[in-house]
Length: 114
Image 1 (cartoon, rainbow, N blue to C red):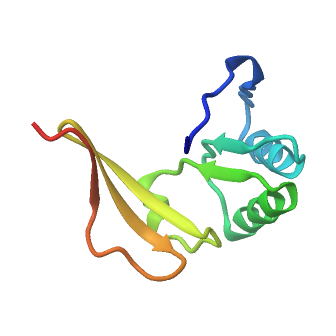
Image 2: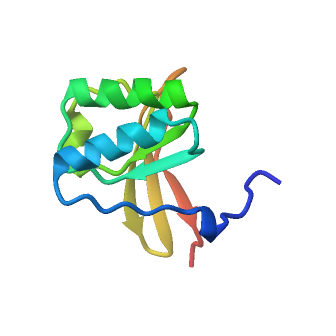
């Protein structure tokens, strides 16, 4: 099986009050070595902060997923993979903005077509 189910008792949700706390909590979670994946919704990140998160993920051997506003799509990033998700009738469209090994030819639709 490609995916295992998520055990909700092992899920930890953190809601920092300030942007700096979000960055700190994300970085510590990635670096800890205790998390398989860390999902984060940071407000704004500069290149230095993105690099810190990338190094933390590598150090802790964790997958980091940042949900960022569309305006951040044109910003430089050290991420190996960058996706743009757009709602579409019956699902969503996924556009690969950046990936190692080349570029995708066209957006991918995920969902059911009516």
